[in-house]
Image 1: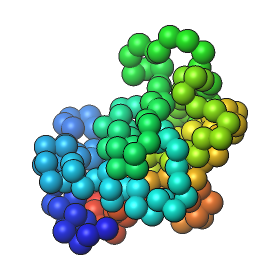
Image 2 (image 1 turned 90 degrees about the horizontal axis):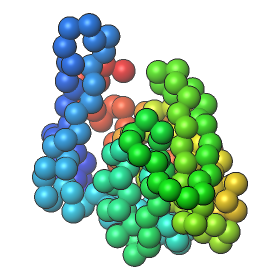
Image 3 (image 1 turned 180 degrees about the vertical axis):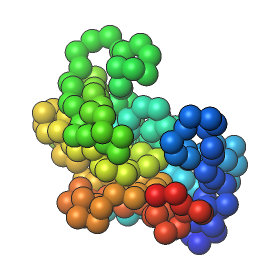
Length: 186
């Protein structure tokens, strides 16, 4: 990844206090989407470590993954499959394959689903997301891949703060890690 992109990602990132009653700061990555040069560079930078694995499709979870996934898919010249969550609005019609994540950083178990007709045997899947902390959603997406006969080739994230054994086991690469983040409350 070009050093300029890493510097720009850090510069455009921030922590925001959501207000009274909040127990922690929340991340603000909205600057990434507003900056055209960063937006153009994200897809190619995310997929670079996985080109040799020849992914045939990119799968990303709602909601921010719906921005990053198409950028990565376009950079690879492959298609994109959305992984839906029941609480994020209307689910797509048709047959879906579901998996539930292990507990995430808040202790929640997240249900994820993909349309059956968009993922199948022979697919080589690159999972893409903005932030991987516990890798819980990555594990659920790999479970969906296995159920559909697809092979996950790894996961690309803008930020990964997950434990190194999980990152190694799940083949997670990231553009930024916890030490890169400004004033990290984690």
